[in-house]
Image (cartoon, rainbow, N blue to C red; front, top):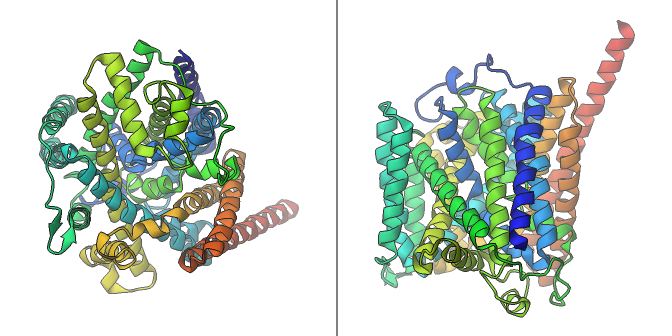
Length: 561
């Protein structure tokens, strides 16, 4: 019964965010205008800049920003107790993530679809652009390299997810062609989701696996190579051909999954076995503050969202006002996924008693995706009577498809960054889309195999930096939006308060990790962590200088008039 109360309070809060708060921010602060010509129309090229139905674009944006992170983060952070995790997810979604994502869309659309790194030059200055893009590239490198490993691990551990995961690509290609020929969206959506779920049912009894060794590499390493070959090809295709329909179908699949999970809560009304505040943590457990706020990123607020908003989504906005639907509602969807994840890993669906729950969550990092799949499958079985085997396959495919969608978008975004570098530094070779894609994929594979050897797990080496780096990026994105608002003479408090809070938590988390890496003698992570922290300070100082100069000029103009 406790789970129902959590769900109801969370849903009411997010409805307030969507119906009231987001409308206020969009209309009064960002002042989104249908008359504004978006980059999708101004620069339409049929490949990257494509005016898109807001529902389809929401599907792309939602699944690109979600990935597996709103499952992984909450499923780990519940270790400190379900109360702080739930509060951060709900309030973070309403006042942080929605404003951040919608603001990044608005800022990029107002600067011809430039990424946050590139447009920071126009808003703050040239030095900021170079510094900002270092952090952006690092985050993308981490996400792409690690999500390749996550999907490969899932394929090895859950071979029944292989067939539906690759079938989803074929379904998306067909739907993309039909949508491009103006076939109505709703019947296509229904057919696409139906076919996808049919493949999930088939996959549960038809596991597929690579040989344990092939070409001198283990099955996981071969999956990583295959995934990056696919991602390279997908990133060069027009967005309407694969990215949009795949993301939309995945978004609809997630909605069905959310209906099953939330419906199961209301049908079975399970109790919570996890502690509200965990007082039995291991001796070496880090402090909940600030680590909670970098462990749960996606599902509360995440810098990666700003990269997607300004990298792909802003190039597809049909109308500027669609930014509220795509950006804020995308954040709400992700918050809902994070919330139901917390219920699945906190309740009797995962562990019948508090003692069993503590056995599963014996230390920080235990549980994670496996706890979500197990708890979620048991929850669905108790509510709907669907077998745990089918439910487990469904949830495993959900995780794989989300991670794959994020990887698709991530490689495309890396290509944009490299092409922007080509424009900025006048390096003609990097302006070429194929060359930029090869450089992007090459960097990911170099990290995966260069640092991780034949296992291909090298991305995991720098992954511990992701939490603090990602949240520092979110604060830098909010900073750019705030400076834009200040220059436009509009209230910036609604972005400055989240910026200061996220930066404080992320910066101190980065310092804690810096000491930890130093004590471990991990000089690679020490160096990268120090670079990110120094870059964030320099960007803040640059922004402060711009704000002070702007205020001084304003006062001078008033005095002379």
